[in-house]
Image (cartoon, rainbow, N blue to C red; front, side, top):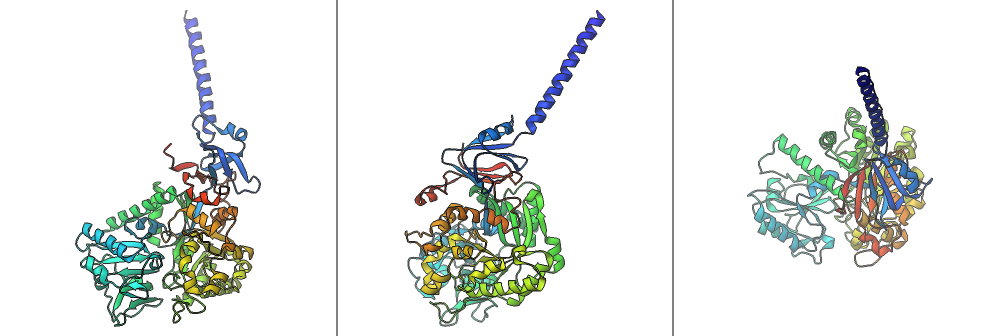
Length: 579
């Protein structure tokens, strides 16, 4: 009897062992399957070995297979999330914002949105409404106004800009600072000027201008570096360190959400301070930021010490969520505020060629960048600014004995170029980091600023630059423009304005070139083309899914495309379909 019991027990134990081993093996096999599979729709890879495919699989943040549905089927397991794309949908490499301002994107959402304002009176009304909600003495902050988009010139005005009296009438006690859409000017009221000690005797700072009326009194407009005179927050209770950190976290979270909602998987942050970078690291450590950040360290009046640069340099932090490997310097201002540095005077302001910054600081920064293994990215909008930057780059390449294409230095914007300088981008291997939507946004005032000949020959000449052999990338310069990649792509391939006119249509990009400029070329411009920019096995599974195939639909339908999914590292961080 006992022998039979033992035999049964042994049999049961054997079954349990075999069953447990089988279950363990099954779980192990399932765990080795893909985390995510996309199938159906159309997948454009931008990988020349397989330009498109109907299915893709990703595991542990990387692409593991791409091909036919049959090829991908074996990667589907018990826990795999399978997304069947809608008919007409398009999956592409994750969109990379090629030039924007991440913290400013978040901060923009906490103030007055003036981007769509069509009159100064409308802006004053927005300020009045904000004052009614504000605490006594609280600063009223906004951004996005552009005088060239107003339907009428304010009265009274100086150089087409209003005077602060209209703001004083609705906000006598609350200081007001309204940043220009470009970020290269600000408008303030009398209370803000008083708190900032800006008076009729205040001189212009280097690279800036306090616009004054015929009597010598400040009008409220502060161009370029003069906007830095504003002591925003003065008169309010000082924030504690914890409160300051909490506000920065809020701003970064808002930016992250906005980027994901617009299909952006990576973001080139064009000029950030060390304290913001440290906060980014802390948030990445706890998984609070989904967008991958490639950050330029901002250089202001002098370049940071070499020791600081060596300590700040960061590559692929937090599973490739943060890289700091570029220095950003601003050589001039914006065309809209007449701060861009031109070779010849402005057509509508013959006494001005713009407001340049220090070439000496640029040269020092270039030497440090070459020595420290940093990329150098320089804001240059006017033709004189771009020429001087190219000259400094060329000298730095010769002095360091390094090749431009190996360094991948960048001119940010490169909006208005002399015909003589266009071929130099390709010859020197300098990247033209441009923003297509600026062309259609600025078009109404470009000819007025430059005249027809200069505008036709060198304004937003993407195609001429590409034909020179230069790498041309794309971004939005958010919050100067909306981060919307669909509007930006549409501008790149049509150069069509809101009124239906076309702005120098011979410079449009092809649809695939425009897609490359938003993906693989931006990845190249960040030394990240081995990680992202194409949908290839082994690369990061960063994918943007759109509701329409923007490479094939009629041009008039491109703007109707929406972001269906934003996928970072194989994980859906935004689902636009409420499925």
